[in-house]
Image (cartoon, rainbow, N blue to C red; front, side, top):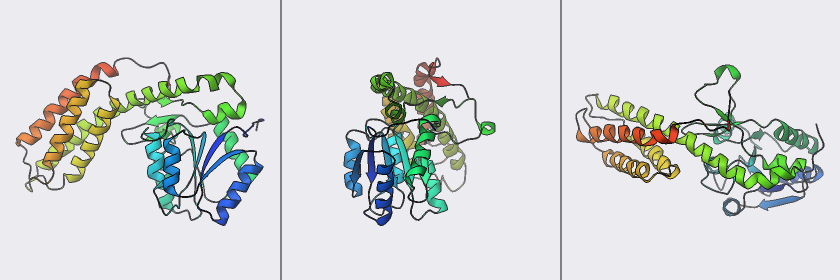
Length: 299
């Protein structure tokens, strides 16, 4: 299993003040964790995560005062905290299929279905130190790649992300010294991957909206597609450094917003506006996507 020291690992623990929480906390202490910060409600958890990001975040899937899945997703998408690659454990005292699906879809590293013992924590930590899964980036997901080798797409490379937990547990002085720079470089890489995925997603959504608008009902049912288009365009604008890309994405988001609630036909000027902006965004993003970063892993 290896000899790891977890005393210096900073842990942020979402605490619901239940007996199960106390069991979990006791097991963490027995496993050697000494720097544990407890957040006793969801607002405090968000506030603490908005500052310095911990090395290990433990979320309660059954939280009743907030959305732990959305919080993990926001962390992975770099909307909160300073390190979107921090190790995240989620645990559920009342696990269901829906909770498992939502937890894994949010980008957690591991999911526990009960409070673990100290020995079980050490086993999980050893796996995350030695064999943490590389990350994959799609238009709506950033997190560990859980596909089997046979279902992986060569067009979707894997990213080896910084691992503060491993650096501290192994006492890797060089990794700790380089951690901040590695986090910044990997965020830039994820942003680049997001640009590529978002350009593809925008083209797909506009084509889908065109197809729906061929129907005699005048585009009935496109509301969800328009909302998704707005969300993708807004995130692309946030991640792209080029002012022209941001301008075009803002125009696309506004155009999609104006179409909501309208009856749209296949020859409508609104639909032509979406087509034009999609082509312009594809052209504007092309220089960003030329070349392959060295830190992408072969699949």
